Image (cartoon, rainbow, N blue to C red; front, side, top):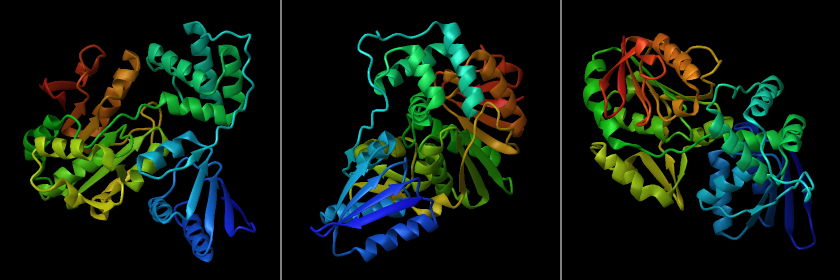
Length: 375
């Protein structure tokens, strides 16, 4: 992280921050900087940061409530994240390319897109070659519109030469739709059918694969806490997107969907109050630290980061639908190796194991809620 600071004649402190803020030293230094300029209005510009730590978020919210800070950001991800938490900022749109008015908007043939995906794999290490191609093409089109590049060949060139353009594409290719206790009947089945088979074990390991911004593993932790099993359970929560992993570690969520979260919690059979597990922070809520202790968040790709194992439960919901049948089968085979004998797998409501060869490794125990057991 690099910080530039200057004071103008109007008692305004201008702070420009380049790079991501690391969670320990950088955040402490940032807090110190704020304290040293306590008598000034702060104009803070974040150049490269996509995510900020929860203590920094809390301080910025407090300063904004007192009209002591104005924020400027160059990353759309950070702008959206702050907005959802009730923190206003100005988005600085840095256009890296001049729009070619004579070039019509187009997308390449599927064969050319596959070549492009192979180039991305070689250049950046992310493998999308086994993702469902129609979905990939839709997301490429959306990204081309976002960065104002009309021609596919030009877009291809810029992605491979400009990491900022690739970052925009990466965010478009990542799917992060989630909520607390999504499909609450699934959690009722976990509490009843699955936990009854596991509660006698001395220790439990569970994996939320494709955890997005963390609502799924936190929902699982709440469920386990209410039945007295959280202290002996380790939850692994992974996603290919490093930004959503940092967001999940923060555990900060908007109040805008609170009513829906509470409704899901009750339908899932929650025995207490949903807000017992959160601290209210103005216009957002923060997950209680006790829930975080037993969750390990880290970046992981289901297509090539090795096998995690010895789990009694794996949840991978609404992820396989973006993969080809061949990749789905590979992932299901890895899940089979990763589960203990008689371990459970839970997929999304529109997913299964019959059309991708997964029935070689799993059999269905709940057709409605997509719960499977290792063969």
